[in-house]
Amino acid sequence: MNLQWYPGHMTKARRMMQEDLKLIDLVIELLDARAPLSSRNPDIDEMCRQKSRLLLLNKADLADERKNQAWSAFFQEKGFHVAKVDSRSTAQVKFIHNIVREACQEKLERDRKRGIKNRPIRAMAVGIPNVGKSTFINTFAGKACTKTGNRPGVTKGKQWIRLNKSVELLDTPGILWPKFDDPQVGTRLAMIGSVKDEIVNIDELALQLIAYLKAEYPGILQKRYDIEESGEPVQLLEAIARERKCVKKGADLDYGKAAGMILEEFRSGKLGRITLE
Ligand code: G4P
Image (cartoon, rainbow, N blue to C red; front, top):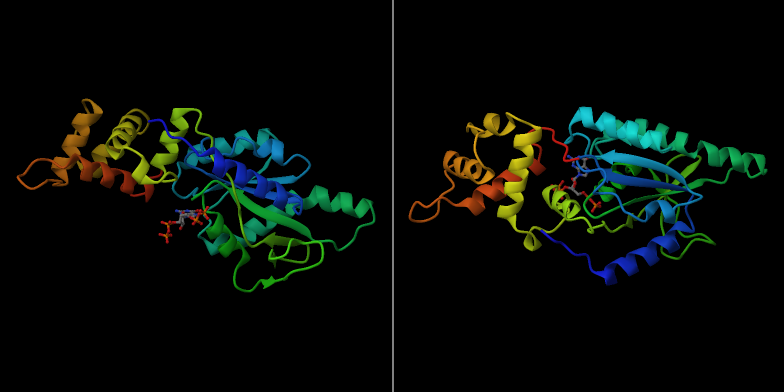
């Protein structure tokens, strides 16, 4: 599967990000915990030099907890502030507030030394499409937060949400583009649903997912679909289609329907908590 991202999109997204970044102290970068490398923008580190950084392994509720911990450690070792989150959960708001404050600490300290007081830290959530940016902003900002409106020195139209005394969050996320150079990246992004299904071969994608699950999560397909896990991926797909009564008119098995169902059940967590990387 060879997916392409349009260079036009990329240039525009990059330009917009660079404009927004001028206003920002803290970059809150969202990754999909099920594929933290593939869902990471390739240019972000270079674009965000000089900025405080917080990395969120979002959708951690759908990902393998053991791997969540391993990926957290991996990024921490690289010097990032890291947290694994479920952006839909309002129960995590306080926890995120604390992490954000921690990530801003250095910047606040620097300001203090320079005699700058009471200047709020400005933050922006960034990430590739579908990673959960809007969900994060909605949950994190909540209804109680006041929008600060336009101010001198802030691009017209930009809205800031005051989170607390020291942090303001831009109400629109920065949209980043994924890196499709490696076909595996495109495949993983398609599996987690970050690439439109219309442009991928669903049957092929489901077969690759079956092969991965069989190798990395033995027993998971057997448990969900009550099938034997022996044989080639196509044989497993056939068994699943039969088991779930995916049939066309005339009683032929409907592989496309079975493939779509497996992908949906993986994406929604019905197959269990699974990480692809
Ligand atoms: P974006 O702004 O980055 O494009 O992503 P958005 O917030 O629109 O989220 C994309 C989808 O991911 C949404 O589901 C959202 O509910 C879901 N999502 C976001 N964060 C999390 C998380 O931490 N855990 C889980 N399990 N899901 C998350 P959707 O199916 O597109 O919409 P809906 O069915 O929720 O309405």
